[in-house]
Amino acid sequence: MKKALIVWGGWDGHEPQQVAAIFEDILKVHAFEVEVSDSLDAYRDAKKLKGLDLIIPVWTMGQIPQEYVQNISEAVQNGTGLAGCHGGMCDAFRSNVDWHFMTGGQWVAHPGNDGVKYTVEIKQDSSPLVEGLQNFTIESEQYYLHVDPAVEVLATTRFPVADGPHRLNKAVDMPVVWTKRWGVGRVYYNSLGHHADIIEIPAVKELMTRGMLWAAEGKGTPEGPTAVKRHAASDYTGMGDSQVD
Image 1 (cartoon, rainbow, N blue to C red):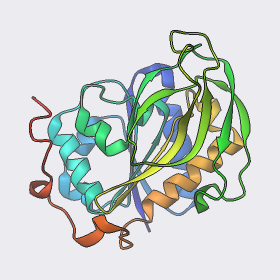
Image 2 (tube, rainbow, N blue to C red):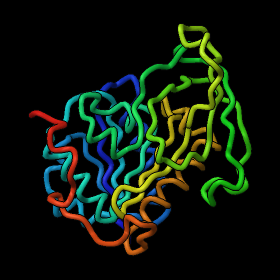
Image 3 (tube, rainbow, N blue to C red):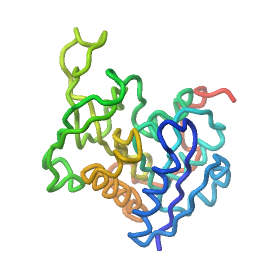
């Protein structure tokens, strides 16, 4: 039985407890043993995190001890999956650049706020994760993110839709769903999910289900050039001056 940890909290406007409950139900249907916590102290035990198959953060904004980020990072580098959505993963811990590097992006704006009608365009044939899925329209926040160019983009949305100072720039396709590797671990992100009802939309729920299951399958199946060896925290260089506790 695979093991997952869901940690929810932060800004209540994103309904973290309700979203965490949806993810818990999905994973239990797929025979996961799921632990749910509303405390960041769930990230204190580095050894425990390494024994998990999947970590799901549902925590918008807030501050996190650097030790906890290092614990998560090392677990993911060694094969534990990381999956999340919306502000719960890529607007968590705004001041922590290690978190941004690991997750692949950071929210910076949602022009028009909630209720913007826009299209999510699936990148057909880009990955088995989106096989058979079709483009869909949604009314919610449309996330503008600063995104790691190394991610594999699985779905996009076109900007601009709503008015704002960005409109005079050229139109861009903003990533909505992506995957990346962190060490030998799999990372999955979906920018949809402003409220729990958005997660319950069938297309969104299917994307999240596939993403969580994919991320959890990373242990024992290392892929690509990063899979030469497993990693210890001491192996990870280049970010030592990035944080001050």
